Length: 70
Image (cartoon, rainbow, N blue to C red; front, side):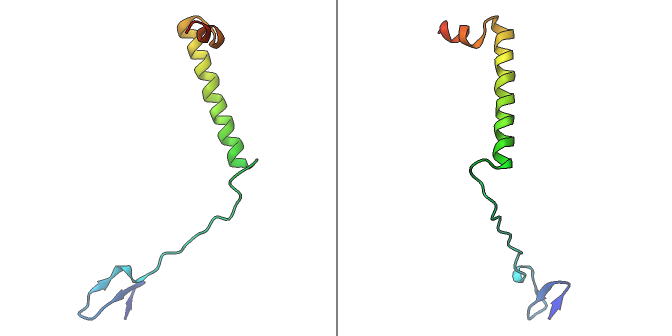
């Protein structure tokens, strides 16, 4: 006996796990020059640029000057 997409077992117990979930397989390419890789590369470049600006603003030296003082 089914009840709104679920199965009721003997003794009127509701079996919530009788329905299999729908499986989705993503077959898109995930390496190389994909849209996702380019967006990630752009975001990481923006984070690096802002970090370099903050480093220069806080220390008064650029990245190369800061690295040469180490």
